[in-house]
Image (tube, rainbow, N blue to C red):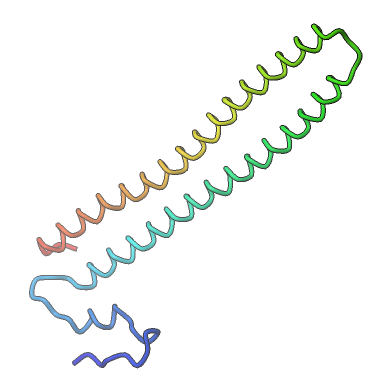
Length: 142
């Protein structure tokens, strides 16, 4: 008979299932499969977290570059010149800033997409392996 755990920390699912016997089912193989699932989930979470960190670092780089460019733009606007020259300079600055913004957004989206795809691929691969393992346990293979 399985002893009731004193506290939640005392609860060990492997001990519970070790006493649980089902004819024709390899409980150890099922537990090993579940351990692999948890490891895959942890790895996918690590990939996602690393992806978020990379995006945040890149956003900080973009912010730094934007501030430097804004300072440069402000300096160029204070220089002497005709109103037409200043208007042309402003137009060029706005155009460049818009193009850079779109490029940066595209880069960040691609970074996030890549990170998400890596995590999803890892989980998808593990799911396929789990289905094979379940099939093998049901058939009585190891």
